[in-house]
Image (cartoon, rainbow, N blue to C red):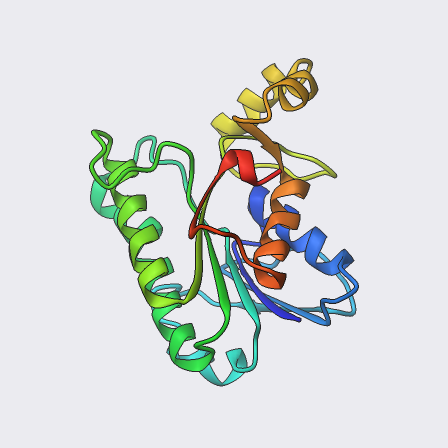
Length: 214
């Protein structure tokens, strides 16, 4: 398989990248982001691209891929609705539309989040709900993953300072939570493997809740 990963420097993206590079059936991984991941591997090619709203200049380099794992995201805390919409809806939808014209049969996994709801009270939930819907409409093999609490594993770290503090505080009980509350928790490595499962065999539903991401 040949895989594209958006957001390889983020916590979820780090897990997706690690598992993809470890997978024997993955021959090539291309990451796209505004900064390099710092990872060196024979399978890995990194594309640093400043304008993630417009990927048309990369089209020739993105042909022939089997899957895209869209892991790029931000916390809505302190952001205006317009800025959050731009990053959490406009960017992934733009990427999905471009890739669908180049690789229409590819698997596209959009990492959303538990609580996403088109009719939700929170703006972030509605915005991500719209993104999920567009991805599923665009790709026959389009998936919206809705992880709950994610334990960072194998050195994965969040780029959001508030999240890093939260993980540091909960670190002593996190393994217990993941072991005993599988319906609401997962890990970065399990999430990465679930993305690979989507690319290999698919899931029975296009919206995949946390309990099925283990």
